[in-house]
Amino acid sequence: MFIRRHKYLITLAVFAVIVGFLDHNSLLRRYSLMREESRLRDEIERYRRDYEESTERLNELLVDSGAIERIAREKYFMKKPNEDIYVFEDDIDE
Image (tube, rainbow, N blue to C red; front, side, top):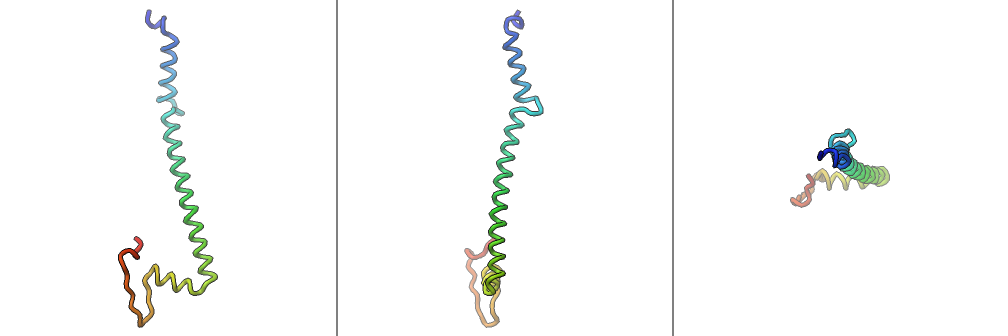
């Protein structure tokens, strides 16, 4: 009796469960794929910024001969023979 009375409601509920949770293209799967897409887009943007920064540095190195010395001193803490270098903890990039 209950099934005959509420057959459309039951059908709608079964459909909602199948589409929402059990189907290959369920709402939960779509939500997880949207989150992954967002994460990957952020990662692409980060790599794009890194690429642009590296290209800019490369062009700087190709144009300016003093840039190589400056980068060697700043990044690799290289020095001239009779020179003292003081390195602070804030200067070290890890």
